[in-house]
Image 1: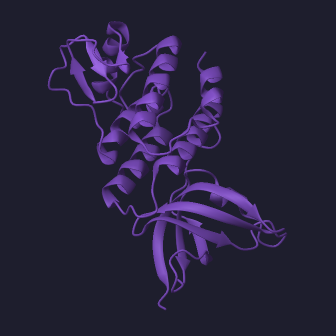
Image 2: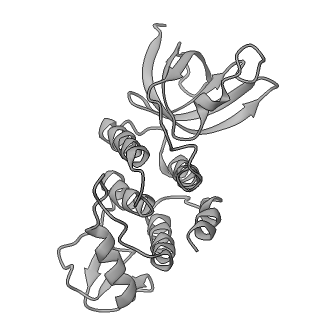
Image 3: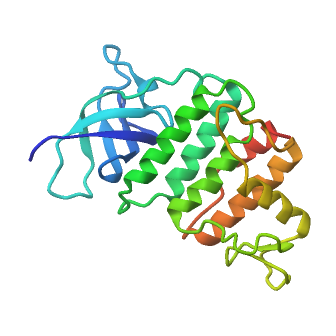
Length: 240
């Protein structure tokens, strides 16, 4: 079979044997794929940093007839060099959380180039922003729902409640999964919060913690077999 080359965003990696990794990636051309990266821990070829969470890499591999089989990466190199994403303590904690969440919600059959570009461009912007970036994960999670099919319906945004289960604003508190008026106001504000090189932080630490819990619950309701990321607690401690 012909060798395939693609860009890929690393979601997770697991040590395999003494010197290798099983790497799960969201690829630009093929959606979710898992690979074996040989010799990553060997003395001659030690390059574990290449497979840090959410790194973008260029990979080449030879596919097998059975798509479910793990394939070996023939070559890999960085597609983009981040300056701060994995070195700034706050940014790296957010990166680990988002990588874990993406690993939970992205499905093997999904190939969506627009989603790939959204993830990539969001991370590049996050990397370039030197300050006022504490709201990034909240804006990212909200905008990600565009691609997952449950972006909030804002037709009745003036209403005082938001129905997490049905994804719309409402005047009546008619569901067990309704946000109260204070939570709804925060949710509305997040819907209209920009994130770019000029934007400022819009929420305080307590509000970020509350919004994160709301967003995780929203994902939990709308995503099959979703479980809370293990790194969620780290973010709560970071922003508390």
